[in-house]
Each structure stands twice: as C-alpha cells, then as structure tokens.
Image (cartoon, rainbow, N blue to C red):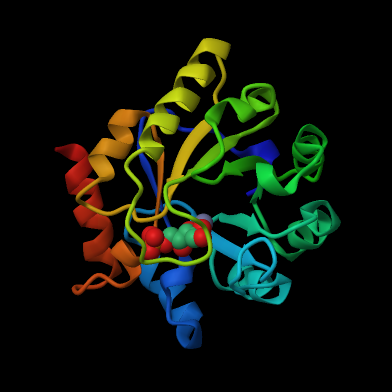
Length: 230
Ligand code: DX5
Ligand code: ZN
C-alpha cells in the first residue's frame, strides 16, 4: 500500500508479526496462516551479516511475499548503507522501509528519499542509542522503531529499560504534534505487551510469540490482543 494511500489509524494498537520466526522452508504458508488473524501488516527483517551478524531475506523474498499476500510489507533494514538499496526494495514490493539511525550518516535525507519512493519511512534505534537522536527527524518519519532487544535474532528477552525510550519518543511526537507511529520490536509477548502500550507504543512487532505459539499464530495474536485489552 503506497504511502500516498496509507491512513494512520490512531485508535487501535497494531500487531506486526515478524517473519524471522517463521519456518523459512514454509514462508508462504506462514504468511497465509497470519491472514485473517487480525494483523494488518507483516514485519520483514532484512539482515546483511554486517550491520548485524545474521543474514535473512533479500529482494527476491520480498517479491515472493508481495505476490503471496495483500498485507502491507514493512521492511526493517538491518543493513549498512541502506541508501544503496531503497529503490530495489521499493520495486520488490516494500510498503514501508525502516532504516537504522546507526547505519545512516544522513538520516534526514534517507527518510525523505524513502517517502519520495512512496513508501512509509521509518527509523530504528538499538538499545544503546538515546531516543533524542530522532527528535529532529520525527517530522519526516511515519514510524519510529525502538528496538527492545539487540538486533540480529528473534527469541530474545525484551530489555525493560528500552521502554523508557518508547515513552520519550512518544512524548516528543506528541510535543511536535505529529502522527508518527511508535513501534517496539524484540521480545514482545503477552507478558509485556500491555507495558509496551502503556509506555506509548502503538505498533507491536512479535515473531516468536506469534509464529511459534504452541496453538498457532492466531492464538499468538489473540494472546497479545487480550493482554493489551487488560
Ligand atoms: C530482530 C528483529 C525482530 C525479531 C523479533 O533483529 O528485528 O523483528 O525478529 O522477534 P521476536 O519477537 O521473536 O523477538
Ligand atoms: Zn525487526
């Protein structure tokens, strides 16, 4: 869904399953198992083995995902020099592209470029990066992603201190009167989802808690929704 047709829904918490937790040998089945569970976007982690030690999806996989589902694809680029690859990922089917502050010497220009490609633009910060680094670019971002684990792998435990940064980003977005979404990513599950929302997150990325739930992805989504509802 191009940025030009996206309408941010402010009143509902969004859940974005991370495909990193899927069985890579049955990725399209995993995607189809998520449709109809109430989620409205897919979180696609791209890793280059340099920015983070792990490797995952490339543009060909994004193209397959685009063919298999109408769910918007939100790419999380954990790569160095993302500017070199923005158009490739847009052409492969990205609806949103999130880059890392730590990988972008000219983050403002990168975000503006992503929007010019008609994708929603996001910036992510790792646990050791202070929230204030985003203050001066929130106005050119559709999504602020606060990593709640050290990026590279799923299945880790959420780092509680990162929720302070969620609150700081949310406060700054409100202060600036913006519509930017706040997203948390890493170790999110039914035990901490409510705390994430109370801190100020409106998009929850969850991989393990959904795609590796003992009763299937639908139960995983429902457990997080129930936790948020309280
Ligand atoms: C990690 C990724 C996350 C991860 C989340 O670098 O950015 O999206 O897949 O997976 P869980 O929810 O299992 O921690
Ligand atoms: Zn991610």
